[in-house]
Image (cartoon, rainbow, N blue to C red):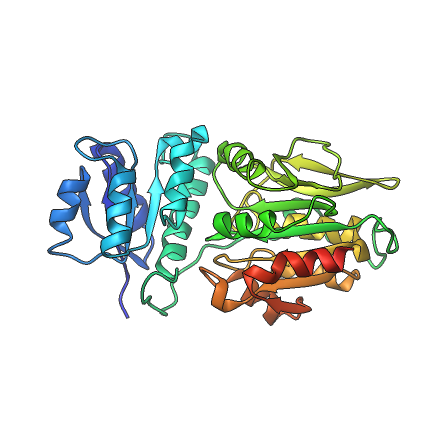
Length: 357
């Protein structure tokens, strides 16, 4: 099997060149074509067959949203939206997910060496995830990965004691982690939860500032309240808090009150926010009061943290392979023995609610 073949579509020559340099730095990725607009891209697709397309939204002659709809209706190919609109929480970006885009990433821009390295990791990881999405046959050949930090970088591992977790009480928490394909999966999950659902805390891998618009969209669809988390927000019954893009979110406890703490810090399991960070904090401060849910996504973020939750008395549920866009994160959690039940997406909310009640 060969490399992941990518076409970069963007009206900016600078962005096309930068994206090409970033992607070609990964030995498992090959940029086979670039195009300045969708018409040029369509013409080149008659000559080459990309495994993944990176697509800007704001372009001349035809916008990226229209082109995305044409691709998904005529010849589905995994599409990663790469747009400056991702930093603005644009409703247009949300529509891209509805129309079949697999991932959303920010355009690379000038910054510190650390910022550029994190951008490279996020962009190449998005391409790998898209290539394995269930839109097409994908290569099973392993690709090189960068060293990654564990949750120790943000929240130290517990000692022999169980931390500050309370024994099982009437105050339950549902802790959720998701990545590739998770935006639509979370919509299905949250829409099915009743108004009296115990407090929900969520990490979904997505760009900074995008989470606020995502939460607002879900809030208009769900019977529970859905908000982007702010530091020290109390975890309340009938409410879901989504970690802001680019901030780690931890579950904490003060007396009988659960709240969230937002932190900066390095990428953990190649992500910020990281599911492992949330799950480790849930193990420490929630223990048997927590129901863990791990959903569709690339990689293994959340597996170690979910194992810690299980060891602290939590009941853990994984989305099944058939309903996942990418069966990565749930599979890794299952492999390490962290999961108590494997369920299809349409039944996840019902089971999580039942266990939390």
